[in-house]
Image (tube, rainbow, N blue to C red; front, side, top):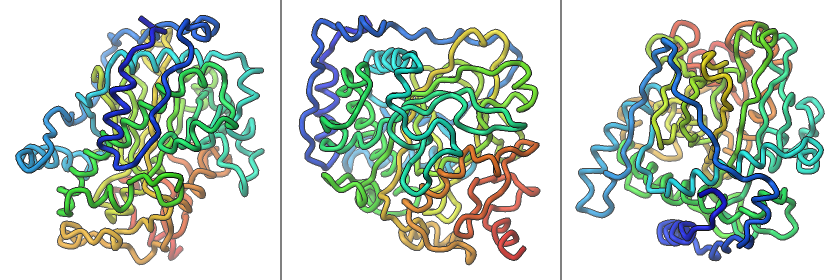
Amino acid sequence: MVGKTTNNWAFIESEVSRLGLIKTQPIPAPKDPNNEVDKKYNLREFKEADPSTSKIEPISLQAIDLSKYIEGAEGLQSRKDLAAELEKSISTYGFFNLINIGYPLEELNKLRSIAQSLLELPNEEKLKYLAGATERTLENKKVSLGGERGAGFKPKGYWTMQNKVRDSIEHYNFRDMCQDNYFFDKNRKYPEIAKAHLPEVAAYFRYLHFNVLRKLLNLCDLILELPEGYLWENYFKVYKDDLYNSGSGFGRFMHYLGMSSEEEKKTNNNWLRGHSDGTAFTFITSQPILSLQIRDYYTGEWRYVGHRKNSLIVNIGDSMEFLTGGYFKSSIHRVVAPPEDQRKFRRLVLIYFCNCALSTIIDPEEINSPKLNRLGYKKPASWEKITSSRWDEEKGRLFGDKDSNDVSGDEPKAVLLFGRLHERWHQNDNGKPPHIIEQEATRA
């Protein structure tokens, strides 16, 4: 029943504290026992789309079953088996599914309901809680994270698409969920419906970071022939009240409002241009609408991503590609108009963009992986030494930028940042690896 307070959040927070290696304050229980706020904002079940009857044949991503992840020495072989499955995906497509993550389904469904009500707020109310400016070109680049990454709402029309068309996407970002003193700060402004449900929001995103991510990183350690726990301890562990040296991330409630037929014609049916994520990992709730596409690693063609019920779609971001010298692939993806039989439904997703500590030097020499050394994955000469923070800031300011995005074709204008292409096109230029393209661009 939507709106009913359950005890699941207490279980989740206990798991976070047990596994997270950080002393967190107990997440407070929701303070609306009579659900008056929920009634005020019409909190109700989110209706997912019906499966499409179109002839589209989507790609089926590799599913990593976390119920098979067994802790301790007795579970080593099970973890090695999962790591072998994961390696096939992250070294090629850069996308995979996670299933059986252990999070209560009723709580996840409630979050979808909260997201629905939050994103349905009147525009005049949303303007009180903007993450940045109303348009990308109006941002003060020196002081603002902007609508892309800041806490609060990104309004429709913030980004420039193709042929002077502006986007039709709205989202709300939550930041610093792993840090009590920041996320629950009484002086931080939240819309009423969001503030009433901060415990559930924090519980979900913390579970992803402290539980799901930790397990995923241990599998990556096995792939890279590093001691289990290495990546977590050195790059993703959270330290109380230390944002710069802690692993972090930001959560997003996002929905697509659709475009007119004229706008879709101008953008070649693109609702969100092809891009790679600047962070380390992205966790997306799978949903039935056929809109998400990835570049096929082997053919370079765009392929629809199929829906797997109650799963997460996970993709590698730039930071993990850089840390592994290109062995892990931060793959390009986009969102396009759905088939006709799904257009009456709304595409709503919950996303967690996870990043390593902002102080991390994102180069393969930092991790000194025996696997990467043996395979010859090294830092290309063209790559300048940069931190995760610097890459996140500079790349974030380019997303939706008119100069790089208002061009014809599927690809934005390539931009070199610190000797690295700002989008990771693995099938660009007849399949040349990104670092070769970067070297050629640098010489030019």
